[in-house]
Length: 398
Ligand SMILES: *[C@@H]1O[C@H](CO)[C@@H](O)[C@H](O)[C@H]1NC(C)=O
Ligand SMILES: *[C@@H]1O[C@H](CO)[C@@H](O)[C@H](O)[C@H]1NC(C)=O
Ligand SMILES: *[C@@H]1O[C@H](CO)[C@@H](O)[C@H](O)[C@H]1NC(C)=O
Ligand SMILES: *[C@@H]1O[C@H](CO)[C@@H](O)[C@H](O)[C@H]1NC(C)=O
Image 1 (cartoon, helix red, strand yellow):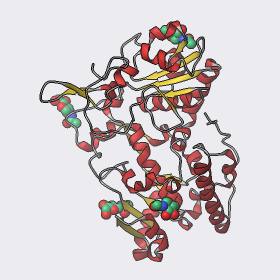
Image 2 (tube, rainbow, N blue to C red):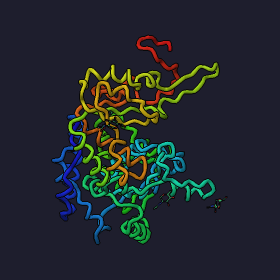
Image 3 (tube, rainbow, N blue to C red):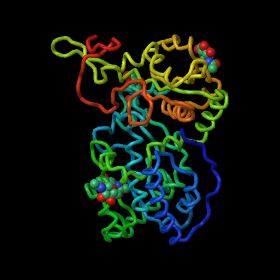
Image 4 (tube, rainbow, N blue to C red):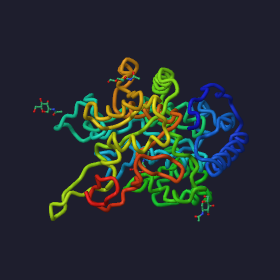
């Protein structure tokens, strides 16, 4: 896997608008080039061309133009109250950031991220059932800057938080400016926002994104050249304390391989009207059991190696049979590092993800593309087809 740790220096140089413009254009071309030419991770060489985060904090904040999508990811819409998992919300956030990059606007980022209750077993949430929905939401969310390094993100896409002074200033200026202050748009393509002079000169574009999910605004996802930020962008933008914890653990692991084993919610079954058990991923439960994992990964990972396992499987000792072949390590082996850092499961997941990315050989759960290794051949995409789970090696009957 590519390297993910960056040198957080070299920034904060004031630049003229012209240089800003040119460097953004160069930056976008670079992104497109890197995405289409190799796989995914942003090259460090693009860093020196990126925008300065400080330029939006200072007195000249009104020389910038802003893009706002709302104060909660995937809201308004069906995910307002009960949000989705981190990966889903990241896809949405990435879609919004891409639009900001495309329009050369500062993105106004929600200052909190909702934590889905099924993804949080840390028990730090005091969910009161009788509070208002606003109170419940505040109790089940965490500060965005406890997850992401906003300065680091701003090197690529300038962002401010929606609880910052700058944002209050922008809002009051946009009111004073009248017509040129703000445009409230829904269903307008980003190409139109860029081409049409009415929009391009306005201080604040306030988009109401698709109520299904923000990422529906990036429907072009199948068109590779339309993707500006790779999937790895947000994972590598983890907050500094999370990156440091991951670094420490990686150093302790030495050279290691890793598997991500998704069971939990993904192996859930339901009975059809004939009482037959069905699942969306027919081979997943089988392929994520230790015997099958061992059979599958032995072609890529020789015995004796250190194997880091990230999983949502909760049965203690579930993966122990693998210990006959590999030296097993889990994040729980490093609780001395993690306990003071991790306040919720999203933070733990972000650290584990950095450790997974740093492995010599990394095997993910689902087949996601042609080149990546996976534990199962089942696709990740929800096929919406409830099938009978398969447990035998070659038979399709269970
Ligand atoms: C919720 O209910 C409990 C007892 O039923 C009460 O003590 C508490 O004050 C209530 N909280 C709110 C926010 O209404
Ligand atoms: C953005 O637009 C929505 C829908 O039109 C509106 O409810 C909201 O108040 C607007 N927010 C800002 C900051 O202009
Ligand atoms: C793919 O995206 C690129 C860049 O946005 C665009 O120029 C091109 O027309 C798109 N192609 C298709 C088939 O939509
Ligand atoms: C991690 O902890 C397990 C016991 O929970 C132990 O068997 C294993 O050797 C530990 N791994 C490392 C790398 O310390």
